[in-house]
Length: 413
Image 1 (cartoon, rainbow, N blue to C red):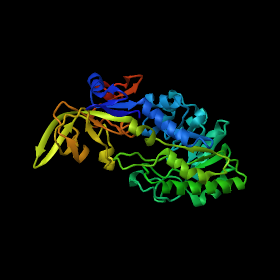
Image 2 (image 1 turned 60 degrees about the vertical axis):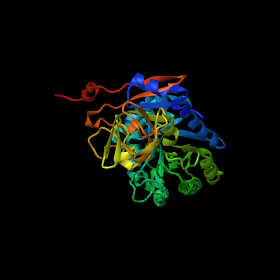
Image 3 (image 1 turned 135 degrees about the vertical axis):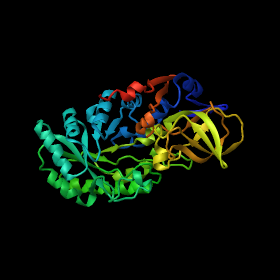
């Protein structure tokens, strides 16, 4: 299996030394396996092979250009949520017709850009947004392809911050109103209704909620087809979870086995929008131990990566496996792995079993390829990490570490 595996006592990525990568490029350092990204994409492509489909990578998970180029080269589509993501996707080789433009708050400038580029579809959040898309398209003598995002009021049973399919969430249109909204949309100048979409949340580890949402989406599509809508796609979103804690999660094959029967007989192309499940396990954050300190019976392993480099533990209480890059056979103990940022929330792990480490040694924070660098910041004026891609038996630098000049380059006066 490609990705991160031990060669004896030392963790490597596709046979490439992580110790050498850290020595060459410094820490904190994001390391990605090209082969692992390719394998994850292939798993979705195989699973949904029985039906016309398109796997649209959700750029918000990781918009690093090197990752985007890999997925564009595989023939993936792109799921974007901003104008800048659109520019990144186009620049990396995604064709506009393979882009779906999602997002709850698209600006007029972003709508105009999507119309001008000819994106494959806008996933419209509301009737008012359909009108805005139509106005942008008509003003340019174009017709925009639109899918309506519906909210089925289904609990994804994940973290409340990444739940998007409940009625109290800001996303989508009440599915009970979808037919009348789309009925009126047929007369909106500059708009062509091509499908419906639902995305109920992220890090979903039980298939039941996804299957329920797809069942409702399929029923809605059948009613619309019966009413003469010329639908082309049914977009079932993304959200499949990652096995951060070793407890097991559904695979793309298991997802397909459950949802394809619900879609049987629909003459539509199935769109999927995975992000996390394509890139999370393909990435790791390397960080070097700065200090080991003890306070009233608690042990703190202080490292050079902080919440500005990997926000998920502080924001969501997220769990990432952390392990020494080189095992040395020392006793393990309970520790907090904390960073240098001036916040008590600056931790990568709390009360975690870890082999004893010493200053200067290297740790790997696993499954960090999704929502790691993409959520990184320059808080405390700390530069964002460098990134490397493991391909062809070598670690290729794909983003250099930021400098002070980078951090201050946009300042005026």
